[in-house]
Amino acid sequence: MTAVSDTSELPSVKAETVLSARSRKPANLGQILRWLLLFLGGLLMIAPITYMISTSLKWPHEIYNVNLIPEEPTIENYTYVLEDGRFYLWFVNSIIIAVITTVSNLFFDSLVGYTLCKFRFPGRYIVFIAILSTLMIPTEMLVIPWYMMSQSFGWLDSYWGIMFPGLMTAFGTFLMKQFFESVPDDFLEAARIDGLNEFQIWWKIAMPLVKPALAALAIFVFLGNWTAFLWPLIVTNSVEMYTVPVGLSGFGDEVDVAWELIMTGAAISTLPTLVVFLIFQRFIIRGVVMAGLKG
Amino acid sequence: MSAYKRLSIRQKQIVWAWLFLAIPTLFYGLIRFYPTGTAFVISFQDWNLLGERTWTGLSNYQKLWNDPVFWKVFRNTFAYLIIGTPVSLVISFVIAYHLDKTRFMHGFLRMLYFLPFMTSAVAMAWVWRWFYQPVPIGLFNNFLASAGIPQIAFLNSTTNALPAVLAPAVWAGLGFQVIIFMAGLRAIPGSYYEAAKIDGVGWWTVLTRITLPLLKPTIVFIVVFSSIGFLRIFDHVFNMTTNNPGGPLNATKPLVLMIYETAFSSFDMGYAAAQTVVLFLILLLVSLLQLWILKGDNS
Image (tube, rainbow over all chains, first blue to last red; front, side, top):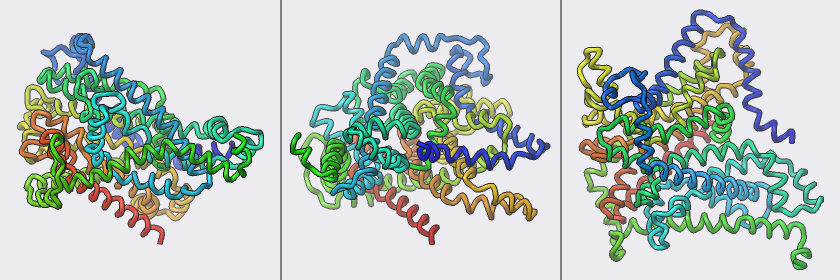
């Protein structure tokens, strides 16, 4: 247990010691200036998001005005866009697809990562190399064969068609494999002696020990599928099957110069992930660092 | 069941391992390896999605070599890489370097920089597309107009369109790079800085002699990660130029957009597959270059 929590906490523990040593100087002019510049830079960073939200709350005649605060804020655009009904459909589609894909990745990536990490069996090395080598193949190379498959099996324009390429990922598998390295073999051996079968050992003993890694993987897979564009664009052709990004792209063309409506659609598709981020901020950033550095 | 009980522990492990790997092996075989092979095969064929697949040898590759649009697209793709990677690397390092030294409201500032990473490329491409519109619509040109500066044609100009499309892609990736840089900075042992302080070394020497050399693995990771991202750019370009994808005059068209159009607008599957093979080779080269640099690091 200690070994596991130690590795996952390592960056932040180090950070604290290093930072406390660095921050003992009293604030001087240089530091105040640095803070102000960073703050202004930060405001610039979120300017596209704030302007998106601001414009989505403006009446059409006001969108030509560069002021950030709308003179007469309105939720008319949201009512209009949502009454249309298509955004609801796309939203539901995107959620279903992102959730199922995330669950599938959490299950299979960690199962395969665990097996490659903790079992010795003939063929282990080949499986390892084979999965590793798929990291080299860009998805753009596979979309044409995937399209052919979907066409011949009747998967075009269906949830399964959108989801099947992403149900397992080599990235997730190696991320989980890395984290299972820190689970002591003694734990698994003890469970084996207690009479648990191998599936129970994985599910009940090993999985709870890598929860931080599972959370990091979940964030990456969910965000990746929520924002995925190329494959859903190719595989869907009826409006009811679109995901949010594909729907928004078509919607933007359709309403043409009604920028307040486009900004509203963009806000609707962005706000859920932003809200989730604001709630779980520290947790998500730690997950991103873990996945980024270990994966 | 009784047969299972007679197996040794090691044999049981083999059975379980393959039981666990059965579905994933099938998945990787059918959804990754088989399609990879198919992509290579189709690149030597002529096929319009409906008719017969006929072998044409290297003709798709010859066509590619002689296609002026391909070379334009090839230059664009590398322009995204060559401008995007250093620009995002320098900006994210400068932000991370200073953010790392700031304690007051550190979490809040970090949140501001990271927020764009959580947005979807499609939504933000439309927001930036609005920014770039001419007066009286676009935000940037409205600002310029109110400052009395002449208008800039962003997306309609063959010279400005590519950097204009690249900007939101750089912007969206900065937050991730800042976070990774900060993790790298924090992993540098404080004793190095203490020693430098005792020796009375200036901040520039500390930066170039301690911080940057020790950050090399982080820098290599970010360079490779962002390079691959820029080489595969698609969402931003497609959504900012939907009225004329990759325009004006192919000035913004990257390889992935050319693949998409060849395959799903012209239905020239063989030709598109040959383009995907080229993309694969480019990405392979970048990855090998990374391995080579990291190996040089150890010796």
